[in-house]
Image (tube, rainbow, N blue to C red; front, side):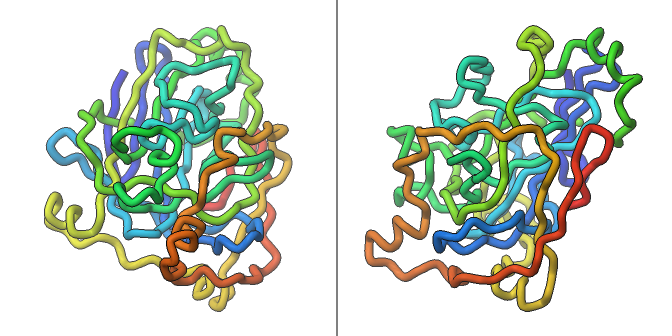
Length: 312
């Protein structure tokens, strides 16, 4: 197995399982949708966040309150788990690299091409929003207890090679390298933002289809602009665009259809406060750009096993 970072993408490769067992993962900058009780369409990509390897760490810069979504690319099937610090982003349970087939704390790629946030209900996620650790804004601090470590975790298991050989002649061809990093404390984690219309597809593969003897895991540290510049010597990306500014410019929003049936959300997230709710409870000023918007009619994206999305 091999893990690498190239051109702002994480690459998971398992040549010992199959020559085509490759998965690409990228983090996309996006607008932060308002947390106003409305469930919004899928926000756009504003380009990939930079990823760098610094002293055996994979680091990604974000501004406080900036939002992101994660894109998974590959024609070879993978079982994927995503965690935020010590919390599973799909179930809200304690993070573990091993899949829990009973709780279904994972999803399958390419059936699930992206994840925009915490899976709180059927057909709905709460957007991933960067927040500083130590102030109680992050989902990890609210659910995991103890000292939060922040960052994002991703683990990938490939499907067994012989199974892929049997089925690939029936699949459309799709274009298709992370580092095992130590776990230093992170200055940033993910809080829950506004609501987005997005289902997490119900797994369809048999459990024994996955090669559980082979997997790779990575932890990405989220750093603020000052630490990013200190680590890399480069300025971070431009400051985020608000949803209001984006909408005024007439730019598109998106809607996914013909997806695998979405599963129910996790009860673990029921009591989680969003970043805006924490601020309101403390009497702090609202986040900038949290006013309600009316997006234009979203562009509908067809996604099935033969057609890749064009969201970003």
